[in-house]
Amino acid sequence: MLKQRELRAICEKFIMYGDFMVGVPFGTGHINDTYQITCDQGGVRLHYILQRINPNVFANPHKVMENVDRVTAHLLEKFRATNRNMKRRTLRLLRTYTNIPYVFDENGDCYRSYVFVENARSYDVLDGAEMAFSVARAFGEFQCDLIDLPGPRLHETIPNFHNTPQRIVNLEKAVEQDPCGRVKDVGAEIEFVLQRRDDANLLIRLNADGDIPERITHNDTKVNNLLIDDFSGEGVCVLDLDTVMPGLVLYDFGDMVRTGTSTAEEDEVDLRKVEMDFPMFEAIMRGYLSSAGGFLTPAEKEFMPFSGELITLEIGTRFLTDYINGDTYFKIKRPTHNLERARNQFKLVTSIESQMDAMRQLLKTL
Ligand code: ADP
Ligand code: GN1
Ligand code: MG
Image (tube, rainbow, N blue to C red; front, side, top):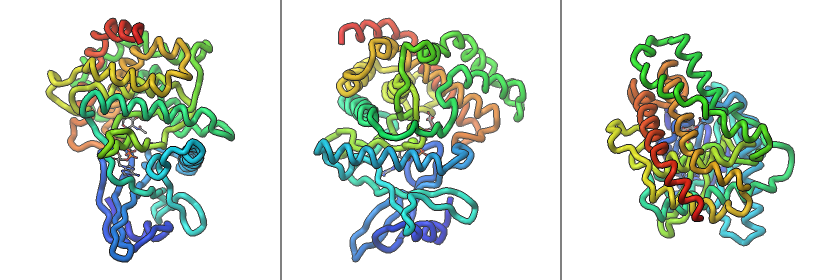
């Protein structure tokens, strides 16, 4: 974490209204270092977000920022054109005095700053079906707004990000190398993944066969990557745009199911508390179809129930792999944190699997 004088020095490179007062760590993201910055503008307090882009995760921050800049500019234009209240609807990047939306510090780390969206917050666990509907609707709207993004294909900021079979291969490599001697403790978890590998390539295969299209997708639609308005309960602003790139909408839908239907936090260790809540699934399905239903193909709709299971297996596999590799990717708060997350996700996979028929039945009725 940076010292106050370091934060101030970075903030001063951006065109930020007011005088720097203080910066404090903010949010529960697993990747970037996020701070809420408070400035004093003639006695009024203004807030900004300052973020260090994680260099272990994003090899090319220029490409990440080019994507984010294009996507946010397009969304702003879209909101203007459709008279939707633009002020808080999209992330707004601050720029430097030379008109660049990011800066590097002396260590070579890349920072960007956003206008802080007030009177809204993100939730790690959703508070009821109404909120679930709003979240899914907002992510669907986001995909819809990006269908006509002009210009070249977006950069793939993390290649093979949702290549589930490749994630399983990465697990096998980690098991083979076993750099921290942890494999002996996680035999059951490894087995859990390997037993399910036959279905892991299903969506990728459908795409390769031309049955489901590539679109511009968010790729990290964990529910806390959306700000929800404190007063209206509507989704206001989609966050965490680092992985917006070409992808499959089903991975976005699946990640809403993974994070929005679980009855417990992603690192809950009492696995009896971890279940997929069916009414929450129904709300997510309805919310997503209310905004994305117009452009989805029949095949995309058909695999919605399966997508939640698939990405939950994928993320669990990534947590397990990171645990075996010695926690080099996700931020952790304790030595077994990634293992706890993996076990939690695998419990959720089991719960989703057991409700597959009911989800498919519901889909038929919608
Ligand atoms: P990470 O990539 O580490 O997950 P995020 O971009 O998701 O980082 O940001 C972490 C958290 O910071 C979010 O979940 C949200 O609570 C908060 N946040 C991010 N941007 C803003 C913003 N512009 N206004 C208000 N809160 C924000
Ligand atoms: C990370 O950045 P954050 O915390 O919103 C990760 C996602 C995982 C998620 C699991 C770039 O998301 O892929 O699904 O953790 N982001 C990246 O909670 O790897
Ligand atoms: Mg995030």
